[in-house]
Image (tube, each protein chain N blue to C red):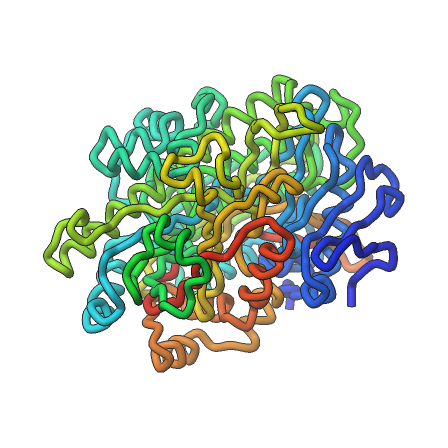
Length: 143
Length: 485
């Protein structure tokens, strides 16, 4: 299992650990963990809408923060449940660049088993680090 | 058990962590709780309230209310007063859901009159008030009109037929914090929120139909002054905030403060969720203005929802909202920072009060209260879990010890993750209906997370606030219908 929810931090919120062999895969897992808080069965989300994003950040940890916030933004602004269909992270002069094609569809309470709205990515225990097996992140979402 | 050995008992309801507890604490931390509640508090409360005590400019104590639990930055239930001249403002002391708050509305109907139409009422409320993940509202606004809402709050609603003058009088600060400047909010925050006016959201946000049973009235005189005059009177309580707009404002400034806090202002970072900036710095003032925009949007949000609630009751009972006595008792904000005047050794002094998951609770005679509450003190609305009930209380003059702040809810005792493992939403819905509470929800998973057993005992929490002299019980309100996102 590439991500796991945790019950031992921040009772009113949702915490998870995610891990993967490379950075891009880690970002995908974190995206699934965050979106699954809102839609329990992500396989029910069709891929009818596409959004392209590019994010630049000086460090990879804040890049993950911005990336998850971007997904939450589209959930409110356009009622879209999106996941990365393609995702690349490259080292650039000033830091890191993420380019992703997000795909998904508009929230449909009749087909999507909705759960709890995510308000924000918090900085509480927020971490992204390189471990012997690859990359590991801890994220607490405000719900 | 999580209680640190350094915790000192000051009285039956006040506990103190001395300033020596942690390096960098400028003042001691005080937690308001009964012995039972303090024993049950999670470790995060002690860690976080002592972190708050390190913030520059903090006065007297860092506080935590009896419903306190692990938050981010401040604990939920955290209160801190800063000297505006030397102190900081921190988004972590306000929360992502800026001006998440409660509103209580009267009717002149009794439980016997409402029960035969309860299903119809709840179903209709559920259909008419958008709830759940990413929901959009029915008020269609341009980005510029939304900026107007952010600056004007409930005044915008009055101008556009969603409010009465009386509604504004019964809202903290008249439903509008002055000094809100839309120039301080990002286009992204506007984009995220302009479609969400009049929406409830999800999580612990709800709209509930409740009954004030005669044996649950603790103070007849104050209850009557607050409008509870009929035995088994039906009231409506709802809880929501500034939606995606407020969340984005908080996120934007959390990031900005992180970039300037140490580099530009040399403030030591204890926890990234306690990112802050001097109150009088350009960044601090910009956040204060932006936060006020989110506060005002939340007031307007609750106001538009109230408009819809009135329409629904009016349709179901074929009477006007006036004829149904649908007046507001009050609207209280939970997650704010405000400049307030407080007494310091006999002198009035302006302080910046952060309240995160805490209700302002002014005592009798306080400035800024509507005249009708000048003798009773401010109505304080404390929402419990959907299964157990809620409270109406009144502010007390002895609340000066916490800069007139009290609890805001019952406070979680079990994580959402744990609650989901222990309860099933569909079964909970059936069980509650058998007990006379009809619930509609978008999400059974979300419902399970809100099970009564996942929360502290609300009776214990409000009793602690009364014993400590922070707020006095007026009435306990029992739910009969509830809609949840």
